[in-house]
Image (cartoon, rainbow, N blue to C red; front, side):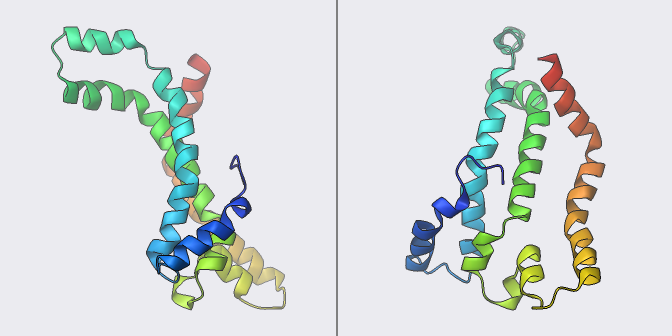
Length: 162
């Protein structure tokens, strides 16, 4: 998808590591690769938001008597909220549409992801069922985007203002 390096590049060493640790066919073995693949991308996104915070704002808060916890929770985190939201949303979407990782690390029906369940459902392609499943798969992303529309607008305008 949007990764700098494709998942396919890391899948063989990752598979060997997960098998050696005994994490194959477990939720931990499925979640850890998701985090490992999306966390660098989210940190990269957050870097631009952190660099955009003026040092003068932090200095003013310290001069006004704010301690480090107050500086972080009352000044920095509210300014980073659009970036945190953008990173979480993109990380969720990247993990939601991932296909290769669950294909290799899960085989139990109870652990199938939505995309893998669509792939393994049948050998025949039934357009109606596939279309319905596609809508159901896209629904969480659409609902999250609609619910946090104000935050998305803040992210876009913050990028324009800076």
